[in-house]
Amino acid sequence: MTNRTIPAERAEHKRIAGLKAVLHHNPSATGARLRRPRQVVRSPRRQSWLLVASSVVLLSVTGGGLPGRVTTRLGAVTRPMPLDPEGLRAGAAFGTSVAINGNLAVVGGPFQAGGLAYVYAPKSGGWRQTAELRGEDTRPGDFFGGAIAVKGRTIVVGADVHDGATGRAYVFTEESGSWRQIAELKNTGPGRASGFGLSVAEGAGTIVVSSAGAAVVFTRDRRGWRQAAQLHLQGASTDTSFGFSVAASGPLVVVGDPGATGGAGRAYVFGTTRHGWRQLAELAGLDTKPGDNFGFSVAAGAGRVLVGAPWHGAGAAYVFSPAHQRWHQVAEITGPDSRVGDQFGSSVALDAGLAVVGAPSHRAGAAYVFSPSREAWHEIAEITPPGASRSDFGIAEAVSGATVVTGANAYHNGTGAAWVTNAISGHVAYGR
Image (tube, helix red, strand yellow):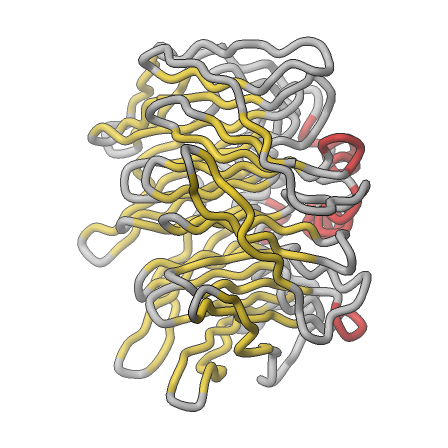
């Protein structure tokens, strides 16, 4: 297997059990030395390594029925509360994708009854299911729910295998307490590629939907959502992984290309100018190398960009911010107890004061929560799932304020699960 093909392989394996086959076969995921069990944050501006003693102790989980736990810097530990989706079937892959914005959380189950997206809202100290979403024309196998984004009261759901793998994205909005589909998006621009809906994001008045080799920006006018731009790399080959991951924040769009430059990977920042959308920056980790797959996951928020490179040794996540009209790497984050093969950085999420990084192959899986302090990022919580068996916990991450949503689509033999965690208080809500 070549590193260039890893994203395509990952997309397929995510449909059946998360990242398992890719993790087992990627040559860069084996044979390297273990990392020391403490957080390493690289500050490129200072050209030094800051070794930060971990303030969070991982509570290991043993046995099949034990609850998941989260330990915060203050030592608060609570047990998860079950929030079962209605009628969830075996093999639903619930938790393949997650999203949250304020008091609205959404979890995808792409193998549940042709694909569903579950909507949750807080109630009585927990979270309850308030709706099930499905595309008006989706069918079993479309992978509806494989990608999800939410902003305000608008939800976008990808179905990248719909219509013979051409793909679609569906837009839903809430009106008078009920959710309804208001748009079905497809790529109508030149050079249309398959897999439209592989990744989705919402920005300031924009929706971004990716396919193989492109990311398409939609804006809304009085007639509805319309295609405004197609972002791509000039001269890129047809097997590019550009668009494998996308993120949006305000007027910015970030597009991951984990197969670029022999699998070292790249991420690109786009924005609007008087002349339309244009590329503002090309991002790469200061120490990434072929096979690291930098750009496998991307997130944006609060003027920062977070990029995952899950095959960089045990995995890493890189933080970038703009200065003097250029983007600079300001930190490299690693798991305090990660080891080679954990795939730290398979998923990333970013909000104003928190960064969340998933490591789905760390034992049964883990999610790490970090908070910035000047140029260093300190771990404030580590979240683990119930049970000790492989669940791909951390395959998907989302954060809004202090609330973290984590997906585990291989939990309970592929039925899947999702957790809602307050990363500050240590309160955990569990859904499966």
